[in-house]
Length: 418
Image (cartoon, rainbow, N blue to C red; front, side, top):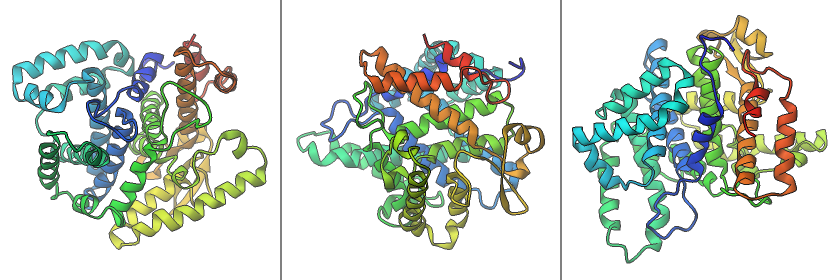
């Protein structure tokens, strides 16, 4: 391991996954189980759209800085939320309004996070401390994250309000959401996301939110169950951490996080087809791919036909691999064309913002790591079956000898999971 690069350890991966256990709206009747990691995924998808729409006129360096602020702010806020767990929002807001109480709570949170976060290096740790100790406005990135957070929470509220008729808190919660959403309508795209749930941006965000209903490993009992939506956020976080560990340039770090965040979006259209079916026969794999592309065109990209969404459409196509390459290929854009590369070529020659690099192979590793932790955690929680055992064995075997991602040895990382 190069000493000057951050390191990714077992404790950090498990911490990120732990949001799959954390129930939301726990004092309300719920039509489906609502968990923190799903809400964070939905929030960051909205934040990505708002980031793109509100950075169109920015110089390149400023735009990249804003994008990374949005990603880091989202991860920092998630880590904080994982520690304070079940504090109800009204109580948390009262604590935050008292600087002394907020500092005491935050100091305790940082103590809990420190052992797992510090291997990521001083820059990430110092950024986390600085961000959490000052709860005040964080500029445009803070406004984007705040708007995305309120929208994702209000979307969940829309699921439960009709089945909790005797709950006297509901009216106040709803009017609070309306007031707070209204305060973010100066962000480009926000009003449409909120007010047009069937068309354009609102339709796309609504589609994405529904991935929380779609469970992974649907034929295999597990504790906890994980959704496709939450899985995408976990992969995005892993991808960002590994991007730091291989010294990726800013554009590459952004691409890896946001590509991870949407990599399973086609599963909204095809459901979670298990790997043995996908990989059984080349023709079957090609058919599934063709169907995914067709459905993406009909149900996703038709929502984004307006001219102001051209950049969003272009980015989604690049990340999802709809232009003759896969979402799990290493790619750059050179002379307006997508080129597929191997890892060393990417790292040695094209690790520069101007090439728009994306590590598809890294994303595949993160996808497998997330699946491994899902299976491993279920087994540790007492669920033992052939599918879970086989999944762990296959992923361990795949990375046993390979030093993937530059100097990061995935086999050694997996060996830490006893």
